[in-house]
Image (cartoon, rainbow, N blue to C red; front, side, top):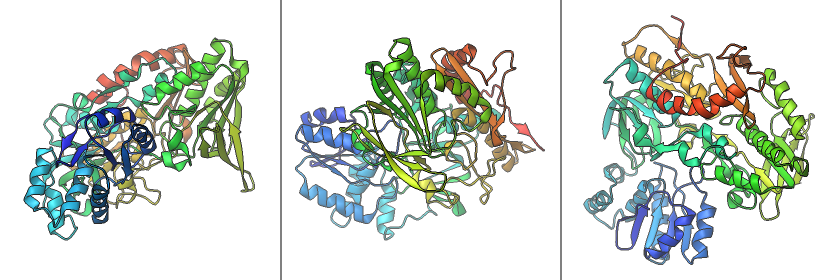
Length: 555
């Protein structure tokens, strides 16, 4: 834990885990305040896990969630009230510690001189000059005063953000680029399916963000609060302002764990798991190994979601394990899908259906998980009928793999860049914003209709890089993205149905049929997934090496 004192009674820290609670108590703290809303990151425990662990060892704990960069004066007063109420000393945490520090600063406005607020925050490693500007401006953050200015600003240091930065530098070495991301760790999320099946170790899917950033790119370790595209400005956590000439938006999406009643309270126990969270994928494998008979449910929420094949991948690999150890007949496997079909591209369905039948999987379409009771081992679904009527269906489980509803990050949904559904509104071919010509988007947060996969981002990055440089006058022509997405469906250990398609569900294989026929299970496709794709990701895509990803030029 990286604990930083602000006063004798208050310290702040970045994200802590439930397992840290004993160390927190041993460090002398008597109370904990959580200022981070649930669902901001795929490696983040939900508050209920923290609360349970804190109370078990006698710590007072409170939840005062503050949206990144949008801490209100009322929340500052509420933080001050908690500091009056709670036993001291107190440890407050959020993603990085910035929000907790900001809340403290707002709670002290009017009682502590502003220079002291700045000085104490700076000693803890937080720049609150922007907060002070907000305090003296009556709660407003002036965007005409920039804390930093860069030629190109990229929001998000995930697969899309780093790939597009590398592609830009490959075309324009020395270009002034800043990536804004508060995370310390970069994850190879396509590997989590394999972690949940005992094939990959979780640690192999994680590297420090600093180690994968392209050389020469500036890293602004902060969260975005708001966009001001009319002024070419981004407002950050702590009320700092960054100006740009071109903006690339690719922050990923938000996992809405609270979208399913009762889920946050039971995640990671009572047989409830999800490969969509880094720390829970190993628990999936534990549950699969322990289950010898009983009921296993795998869920899929309404679209759009990250990697639409992932819910099935977990199911097939689990069933394959049970088959291999001879207990498949004793396990009742049910797939509850909010959608109406097994897979959105019909060409791949026959091969998948062969496995569904071989594993004895029950298919339940039009069923959306709405609540879960972990201790009672019951999951409730809303079942949609053809006539529009709905009914509730309750199922018992011994193990359930849950995929949460997903949406654009909060700061994107409420911004001028978003469409009516909350996603960044871009042209599906050029990936340029439909209103702001110097703004581009790619990856999961864009409103393009392609599958939200790393493979899609790999194809999108060169398109954005080229078209952005065209807007700067450095290149000519126009690059187009054709909607390519790839979903390696792990139907059994050692075989994959390699689904590849473009806009409209058009099959788009990368290899000739004699090598890999994507509509059939393939051992070579498994080798590709297990051995080739991880190094291609780390040493190819993130390094700007556009193997089989050169953009299509239309002018």
